[in-house]
Image (tube, rainbow, N blue to C red; front, side):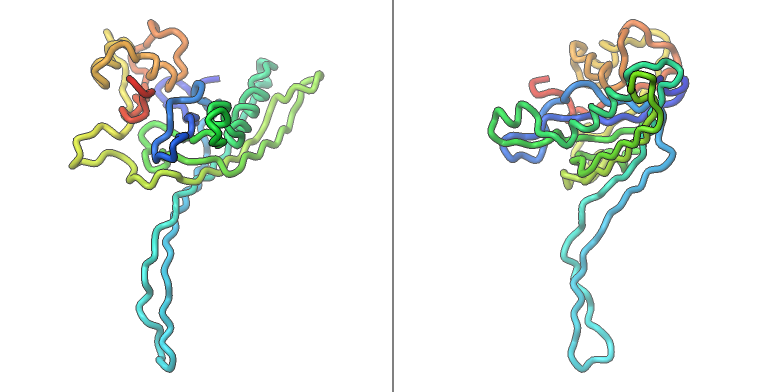
Length: 237
């Protein structure tokens, strides 16, 4: 299932965790986990810590001292349903989500075991798009085929921010660190968009993977494409 025409599908992209203790992840780990249906609700949480100062004998407390900001957390629900096709897609999606809590093979080989970093993305809603780790995955399968294959499931994800970078583009840096959404017009192609956005037409597959495109030659006018940020490109691009 895909999002209706004219709408951008939400997805979760996994990344190789850094093996050198860096603050940026490695390249994309597999293709994006595209949602069958866009979420109906997102819960975004941000906290700040203050230390109160109590003055003995005073009628009022002293001015509290700010000690730091907590990471953003994002909770979302994912609805999966293949009752019309009876395919194994629900089981495959659940398995992919569970890998977000399991160390990657590359990190184990580097003797620095770590689950993948992830980033949730949904069109132009940049506030909820940040590097994070998945602290919990819960999948409630509610309908099954005769052979036990799950046909419907409600999945809950809890994401906690890793990078403390300010979301979006820094207007003083000149860097292209924010994702964009491009509406396809006649004559567009993935290599042409890759050249325009990144200066290299040969990395068009990054756009294809971010949007779940199987045939790069079929770009219907009016389709909205998510263009990953330049800092999300694989190393060496």
